[in-house]
Length: 305
Image 1 (cartoon, helix red, strand yellow):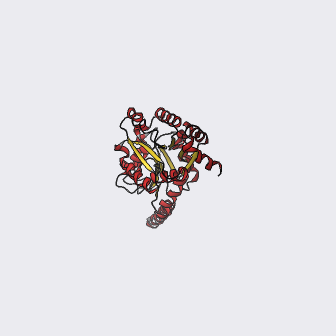
Image 2 (image 1 turned 120 degrees about the horizontal axis):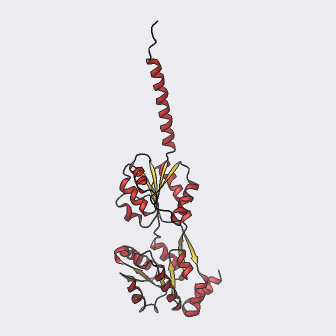
Image 3 (image 1 turned 90 degrees about the vertical axis):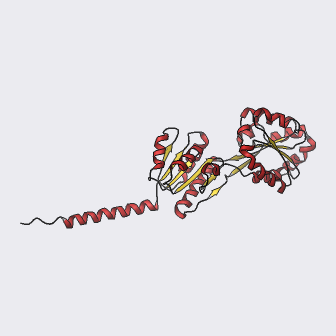
């Protein structure tokens, strides 16, 4: 008896195999897995990561650069992921250096993303709080005509100070940029003008980053009747009158929504962070005692709210 030809069986099996590939490929296209690259396990990054995990609708895999950089690099270079999220500056650099095959990249928890990614399109949330927003809030909270000093180094923040000058003029504030190239110059620049200014506005700057320096400046300012505005909770705890505080969990939650837009709608969104304002009543009371002619009206207005 002739043996039956295996061709029909082979074609049938091949048909099932191709059908399976099609279904799998369609499922992958509908809900692609996400690669999440974490710079390290510091608290702000973890807060953003956990909020992202709680709100993301896709399968994902997390790679911690501080635990296994080579593994993270391998997956960044592979074609495993259509979409990846970088949390922190080290992760951003990794994705843009090695992730040429990743079509969708989203970055969070890094300052000045434009400087990190170069000429590439930026999708994500920048940790830099817009200086125009800060000065607008200062005008609303403190009133027009206030003299605002800002400590900065030109290499890092020269361009930002130019934007600040334009925004201060629009908000009827007098901006006094104080350029410093080392911590030893800070008090030398502040001392001659501190009696004439109303506010010291801190911005992220590598020369003025030490907690010891910030604490010293803030205490000195309070004793001289000068308000301090800072950019995180530490400033509030040290005695700043107004602090712009980024909610890192909110950043992670917002990032989940941006991933949805990037994957589903191919929409790249670049946005500043959500900010909470912390107002320090104890600091205002001290300012009123020190220079009542300058701060008593503000304190009265605050009590009436």
